[in-house]
Image 1 (cartoon, rainbow, N blue to C red):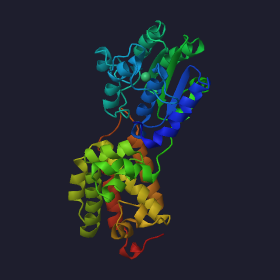
Image 2 (image 1 turned 90 degrees about the vertical axis):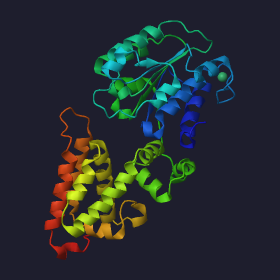
Image 3 (image 1 turned 90 degrees about the horizontal axis):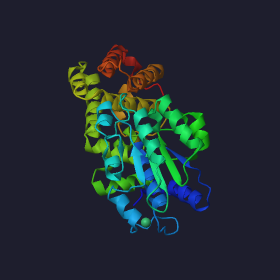
Image 4 (image 1 turned 180 degrees about the horizontal axis):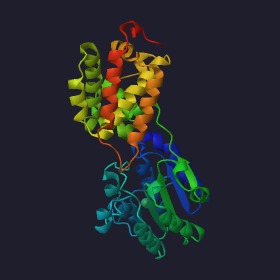
Length: 355
Ligand SMILES: [Zn+2]
């Protein structure tokens, strides 16, 4: 069952298919945390189903059954991969379960859609299809394609083999070459409403406070939020926020720095980034209910930091978040330390929040 916030995007796809408006390529833009892969797989399943029930796949035909088993002969996925993974043949698969299980590691600089994988794909596209509906290739993380791979894909767009659909997923429409964008049918995933996000989280049994923090940390993407609840990022964020408050009261930062240094750089960036965004929102007059990491006391204490300082810190963090082989792994730590020191030297009479 497709997540509720993906339904309208799926209807766009199935509508275009049923009305014969679908070109040979579709570009779906959105993050993995929003479910971009789930949607792409559902579009593929529908396209290949040989007994479509209106705008849905039947689930029972030979095509739907082999799709579910991860053994559909007319379906492949080219994934972003590390060199070792590509060497082991893990870059081209046709099992939807494998695709969904993949670690959400698109932030990893070395992982990309490899040109050899695209060559394998193009050879596969030129083979004739086995079933009656044609064939579907899915390229996930297409924004990580090097230029050579993108050019090879473009060639197959120019003369697509008949009854072939290529689905590309990417983090945003802008992250792909204009020449690829212009040929494809474009679908951009909407963010879910707060009700949809809360309803999705409800069966997992977390408290409303935890869920709200998770959604904020994940920029409202429900799958990302769930992941952060399960891997301890939310608990760590709460601890860091609490520890920061203690530090400001006690004037020594050793526990805070210890707590932060136990986290991976990616988590440090996520947590500090959200703290800064919430502080900026607080300064802009947002109500505390919309700022799940801030208590009233925390907000007053931390908002002594000037907005300019916070904007700079946010920019620095974004820089850390970029995948780069030159990343100094302790950089967010240094930022926080400077931050605490700046607060410590700010005169107490400035404690009134500068809102
Ligand atoms: Zn079917």
